[in-house]
Image (cartoon, rainbow, N blue to C red; front, side, top):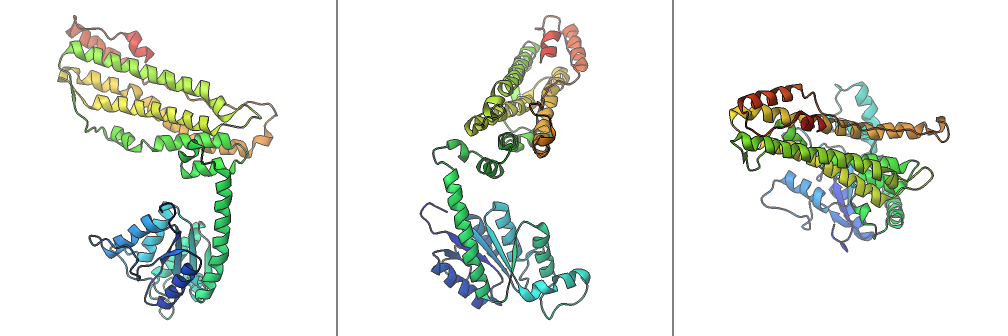
Length: 400
């Protein structure tokens, strides 16, 4: 929500059977200075070009600071997927990561274990659909959200007063820890931000690993383009052998430079970022380092995408395809190294007291090229067919 705007409370529930309860919750929200976002009031934002469901989900995405789910005895109307509006609203709130409070009618909660033991039995006297039990069970089984029982609105408001107080206290604690002058903090993703704030044992290593994964994830669209072999950028048309070989040679120089800078960034920057043993890490340096490594990874993707844009005569297509594969190993190796880094570090931290004091534990990233025999064979073939063409030497290819 914009700065200076009242904190909003989105109330999600079926309306008709809980109309009085919802009215009481609106009064509660007003009394504690919260803006209630509720579909039955004229303050609820409506886009005339969207459906009822789309308007509700849009309100969760754009207007909800805190999400309150109240489950009574009705599952409610369903969309084409068989999910109710409240179910969809909860999923939306879960996706955007806002605080969620869930209340379920006590009588319904009491029947949940009975339903689990007898899923085909009839519970029509209590609930309108067994899907209600499925919904509640899914929330509780996830273990991600606490579920409070209630009998009437006073149970909900009494609990909310306490829980909102705890939330406010947590926000104040967060405000103390995060300096508004530290621009690096603003660049962190949700999980990385939590690591930086909590600063538990080994936080520097975990922050580096998580932030590096976030950097790679930021380029997932390009990675998919590489995987699919597609590029909608303007084609690069080269029809002469005198142009093809120098073009490829220049690209090989670029990839060698990128790989060297990637290695240099890790070697020169990692220890300064996470700190020497016994010294604290530097969040600013960690963020800067992973950004640069992310730049290097993106350049490798761009390098391969550039080959996809290359239009050449059939005589040179095999050479182009083989040359384009020279970075495939490096891309995969960076991804595998990053994917394994966080769980490896977590395990090391958990067992760090078992290692001898002063010992050194290393994780090495090695960038390699695929087997180049086919590429060299193709180069030799072209040199025989075009003896006056510029030469792409074996040494140049091997060094890449």
